[in-house]
Length: 438
RNA sequence: CGGGGCGUGGCGCAGCCUGGUAGCGCAUUUGGUUUGGGACCAAAGGGCCGGAGGUUCGAAUCCUCUCGCCCCGACCA
Image (tube, rainbow, N blue to C red; front, side, top):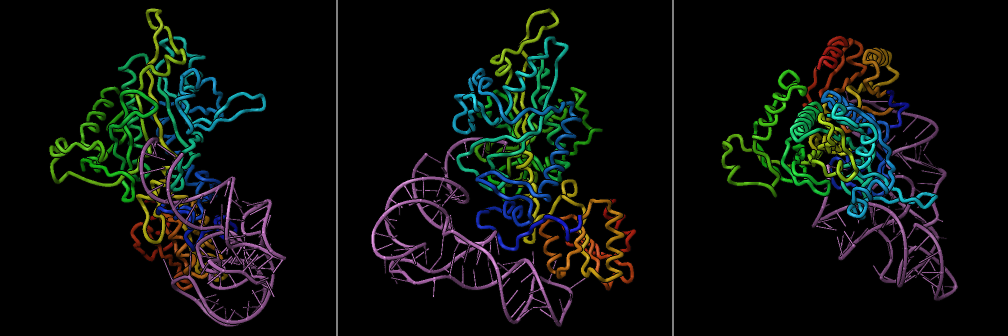
């Protein structure tokens, strides 16, 4: 993308409405624009990151055997009356009346709907197990939205729902999701710690929340340093193998991790001192096993091998996709701006042509831009160098290829790594090698 | 939902107390000089002062109501 033609409005001044780093930076970098309290429009740069995060989530869900569907944002109140949650959910739920005076709502979650859909087709134990997920906008009418996309009212969420014949099967589904979650966050360059959690209004008796370690997080967490070394390659753990899942689950849940309100000093003392870590965290995911709570209420049952009806065991698994952007920035930024992990960066490289119009600088910039095949922003604006440096630092592209008349005359590109500030002077070939090889 | 605060050009703010032709910085446009870390000079454009009532000769300013947004707390992917 050429910045001379891009819709990428960066702000020099900090918008008064933002209180935390990620919110300020997303506004300043031109990623989002607030349209109402807790509701945001996504601008080109923000949308690119959102889609990258979404895609990583999708790939790991698919790899775990879940199947993607897409359910609507608007639901009928009838479904929620069946489960009893229409009254329970309270004012958090945005209720809508259509022209025929029918009660509708903007979905805050989809347990009822997915159970109802599944019920229409699953008739036999052969139709289980299944895991269905979708990535869709949700709306929860928070009393007090804040922190930008970290706690918006409208937010993009991945929610998966598993259906199993028995508790044993449901346990495997639960563990497969936990593994997928750890891989998902790992791929985004994040350090995630699963913690046993309250089940809240969704209900059930087994639940973990996933906390991203970030210095500016809301809650204090205590965890075993072993989480920092966890390697979760597909080679080590195959989600298709129950024994692998069990090994993984035991390993992860065997390690100490707790938020401050669940902190247990006695258990904490068992963790060797050199492995004790204390930090701040942001919740980005939550998984629940809740048994037959919804399958029963929604009348879902399939025929077992003996012909007798069986009510499936269910779980649900959420990831706050849009919230993750805020969490990533909270975990990875500095005074100058965002520092995107490579996997989710809107563009891998920013090409800073310090003097558009200079023949050598133009030629070298164009050559590099073409070679990077779209995964680069090309700052060809007629601005001063400082503006380009600051904008590139702010938007947080992992690499900056700085091209000025001096170096360009000799075919030299100054390559800067955003995360470390390290700069090297290299040839075009070497620059490509470093950028694409990383 | 309780408590507090703020709405004035795209952004950040002053003006309000003590009513009298709406201002500053940034951004934008034009011209010139600049050109490796958010340049300088000159000129220009851009405002139903959140909205509705009221008081007054006169309201951004005072009064009433209303809408929006932010912050602290309780709740949450």
